[in-house]
Image 1 (cartoon, rainbow, N blue to C red):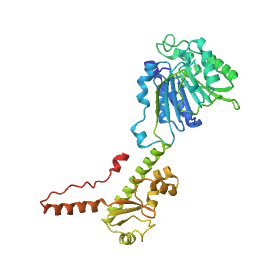
Image 2: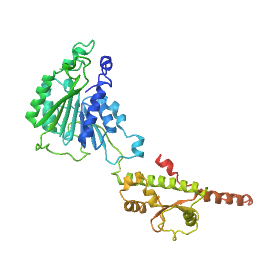
Image 3: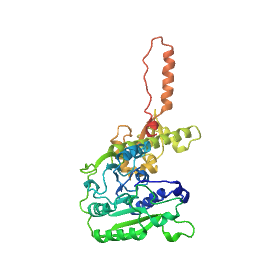
Length: 394
């Protein structure tokens, strides 16, 4: 529930024990790919912050803690970053924080694939543990549960420690006590369990077990997890919702279209620049020939070419960009998406993107300026600047 990074812990473990616990959950998420994850007793939201960067297929990430002030202090760390808007994820992600007790039943907590309780259970009174078990395994009934708690047998190895590791701990279990409780839960609620841990004892003291003992519960096949909440926007009836944010994703049609157009224009402009650099050096016969032909003659051409004051970039060239391929899947879908967007100009055959020749425009502006120098009558200034697409995509 809380991370006490005391000096004695820091001296014994590298990386720190709390990071080893986080990494254990991250590795589990990588292997089993849960879609909905809830962290009970999330406190400083450290695990949630890690999972939002290692979320794999996670679409809903929720945290519950009874300490409202602790949650409010950390909400900004869960907000989307600039990169999340510039490079939206293919999958949606909603993050929610709730204030509430883990011994109370809240409908919003049902239907989760994975429940994590890292260093939480020892903060409960012993008489509350049964209610906690009933809520997590009986009411929430997720596919998997990961519970970690201190191993009291390891405490003598912690220099200067007297009593429990934290003043808020109500108890600390031996390995036998923890396993007895876990096996009882399995029998009552239809789960299996594996025991492991993090924080290996130094030297010849391995017989005391891990510093943090961990139980990984899996719901037995054929056991239903009851009602599934597929409505992300469901409001809590017992808990208090403190924070909810929906990350930008390509599942949103507007975000998908904007991301695609930005990437397409970025690729097309890059190809245009390469073409213009090639013009300054020796050009191939095919390219030189294409320059002298109008677009209707070179329709379907696979080379970049110029016609009048525009440069034509074939879609086939744009399609070679791996990011464009990842977004569209096939060139037909790419063509259809661009046909419906006013920010992209296609030729009549829908085979090439038409980009303005900025060099030609600059020459025209210079000629216009020279003519205006000989005319004493002031003329209105026309702004022919193009949209700065590079700034838009960062």
